[in-house]
Image 1 (cartoon, rainbow, N blue to C red):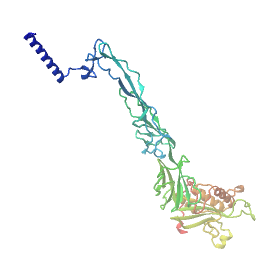
Image 2: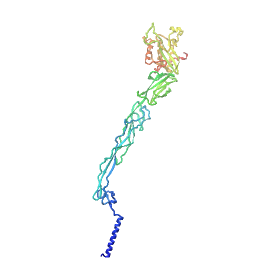
Image 3: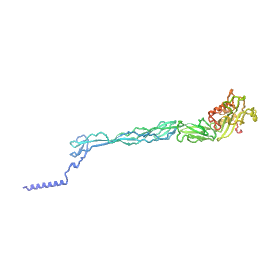
Image 4: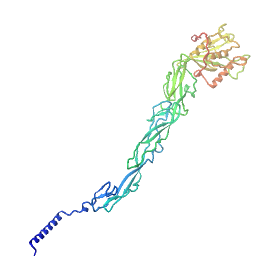
Length: 491
């Protein structure tokens, strides 16, 4: 039988056991795995003497292995390079411009840039050592993780280029001063785009040049003229002579010769009243020139300006002969035919008067029959029967000074002789007035209507004239003299 004290101690232990068992039922005993099935890890510089990089697991039972680590990045490449399209894009803007002018604006579109990148990935694994220290292995090499992708990049024109003239960074051209053809190109580049770690590679493309735009640079080469809207345009010998009030067409010839004109070019102007644009303009000048240098100008402009000096004339001189090439030297013992001059005055394209002047001796039967023999007076007859504006003839426009020279010439006392015939008078009138030699010298130096007529025919074959279409070129400076003026108002 146990002693009371022993029994008491045993009862006390039993009670204590029951208490402990009850406590266990209410508060379970801690279990490290259930509490932290994935142990918390920290990176230290030196854990367990491993030299850094180890993972120390606080749970002495080490726990589950840590999952593999991975890193990602993009590998960039500028290929394909900047895309100019198909066909390659080129600048847009004027393709016909005038020499020396500025303000021609150019732009370009149709280009793009898609940079290429490839996703990449690398991984590493680790393990615990005997002391539950986690050690990471080396990273694997980078490997592509999917197909290549493209991303748009910012591009812009960074430079403009021209083979002639100059062009600003904004694409505004000033044309060269010589006509011809130039090329304009745009330099296109992408904006600097940095690649930040961990990405690698580059996004920068090389600058590329666009396809060239060919531009024709045009100038006014010269100006031609035409009367009455008939026939071809003719070259101009300066100054151009026109009748007062006559409508003349002017045509600008471009350089290069095959070029078309830029819009609204050439532009016409000048003191003649010429105005407008386009290759042809019609001008009517109703103010006569007061001197041989009182020009009414016509200008054509396409960067450069070509000026035509127009001499507006009121008087037309004609030289006439009834005979020409193929006529015998003598018929019935004397040179056949007659030669004379005419003068016609115009006002606003209308002939308001005309006269003929010829040399007839007093002894001529027609003069005697007409009662015009005047003894010592001049043998110059005005508007004598049989003289008109016909026959073999050529016409010249007279400047005011030439008109004065003609007045002075016919005002002289002129006597007909074998050495100074009607052909001599007509020849000298033209040469003294205009400086042009319409040769009348025949056999032995006699001046005859047939020789004068033959040379008129030669001139007309090269440059036909009429009373409404006189020679428009520039005669030589007329000879000067001190003879008194002929008063046309009396005839």
